Amino acid sequence: MAVPRILLAVPILAMGMVLPTAGAAVKTPANGVLGMSHEHYTSEVVTVRRGDTLTMQNNSRFAHTVGPGKDGHLADAAGVPVSGAHLMETNDVYTTGQWNTPGEYSLTCSVHPEMTVKVIVTD
Ligand SMILES: [Cu+2]
Image (cartoon, rainbow, N blue to C red; front, side):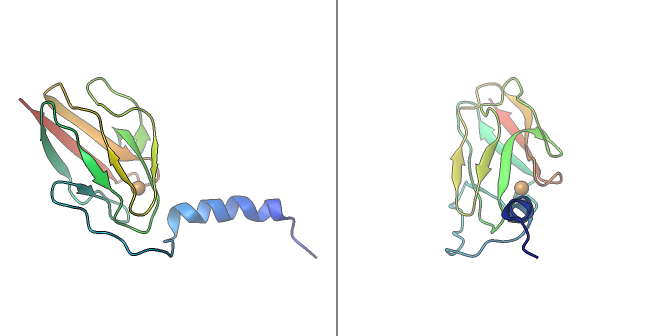
């Protein structure tokens, strides 16, 4: 008995978020670029100066959906120059806006709850 295609679509989409994808070689992030491994940012803390942007790159074979927030919960926050969720596939690069308010903030990934990085903005 044939399985309707629609029943395959959802599991296949879901697998794309948890299974590595084949394809082009993973590129190593340049100095100063925050990387992403399977379930973590490659640094737990990053420091930027007031007025700087922060660039991140997905150097894993897993998709990440990043934005402001903690422990996998995305929520826009005052002082964080990132709004909403950003899907990042292998080798995708995203640069935030300028961090203009000194303090401590966090970015997370809605797919990987342990994937939270603290961003310290210094004067
Ligand atoms: Cu992730």
